[in-house]
Image (cartoon, rainbow, N blue to C red; front, side, top):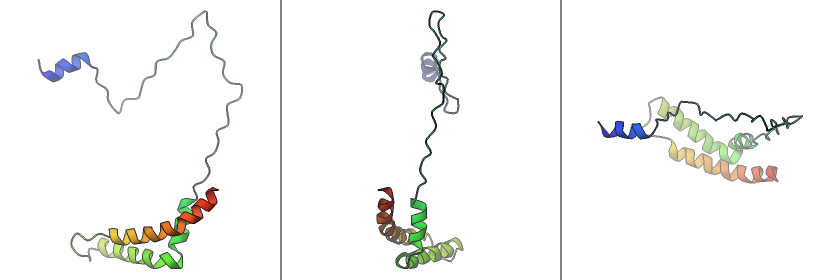
Length: 113
């Protein structure tokens, strides 16, 4: 008998893909079943996230357009195989995101108030 078969005899196997089974409670004869609410509560709609729109606006501003253009040019060059070996555009991405974050933060917090 192997060690794994010994453990499996004590512990049941749980698979991540298997749906979780919830025990169903049956009302007892002497208890009344729980009443359903007469009207279902209306689900509140989550407000739309303004950040993606603000980020796109900031990428097009004069301050960040140069960094965004430089990043796009680097991506094109690397994807075409014309870059240096093991070259990536992480530095260009950081410069662009730094500019975009500095532009978008005040606008985002102003909308959240």
